[in-house]
Image (cartoon, rainbow, N blue to C red; front, top):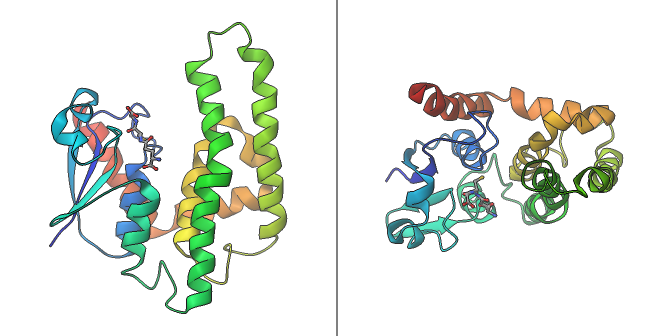
Length: 214
Ligand SMILES: N[C@@H](CCC(=O)N[C@@H](CS)C(=O)NCC(=O)O)C(=O)O
């Protein structure tokens, strides 16, 4: 059975690949798993039919028969569990790859999301400009730590895994900030992720949703 994911009918990022369906598409492409996409509007995401799939009224969701998942961490773990190129079969490398998925979502992504909140939602607040350097410094702490761990390695562990897929996806949200450029090995790591054919296919597919509407 071909799974169906949901994505924005009209993504606020105008197809730049920052909406979270992108990381799910990427995982599905890495796993050579065909998939269908159902586009949803902001209004539809808050209606009962979508809330039955996603209690928080967000995208993406993942449906495969009677299995319905939400949260990209869970969705990508589920996809990766069926594909050894995303999750090694051996127990210890597998556990390490999953650890990096959690690190990306729980430790690296929160300060990055905070920057987006500061720039977009809180931008008109009188204290916004004063707070911004604090938010950016918190990201720098994580990037410096990641940079130190990565060193000259190609990927976070011996081979590309769902951990890298999640980490690169999270870091890509920093591109416009210029922060990535302060850590050349992290910037190169992100570029390696983007250069993967599976990433490119996923990116093209989500961009087409936007260009088809234009
Ligand atoms: N933790 C969730 C976050 C999902 C999320 O924030 N989705 C965004 C799109 S990237 C969304 O649906 N935003 C619209 C809204 O929250 O109303 C995940 O990783 O799946």
